[in-house]
Image (tube, rainbow, N blue to C red; front, side, top):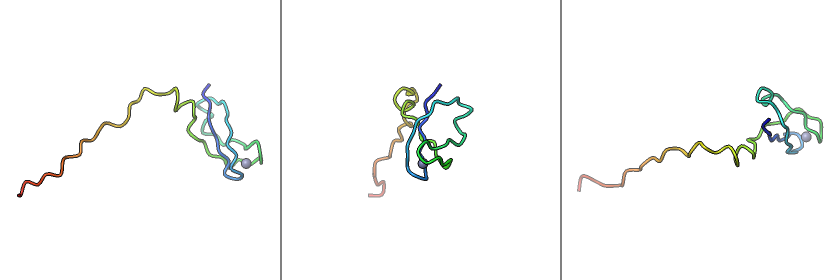
Length: 69
Ligand SMILES: [Zn+2]
């Protein structure tokens, strides 16, 4: 099960929860203040181990040449 990071908007608490994919978009209760006004962060586990998708394709910026010299 993936590990998700949540941040409470009420008190700023950041906490982690193991959730099924289908539950990941559910509102989670802040363990500190009990608020359900929480936001999901991108899990750090994702960032570290989830690689594989390479960065955006390089966009070649044309050199600032002027044809009208
Ligand atoms: Zn809270």
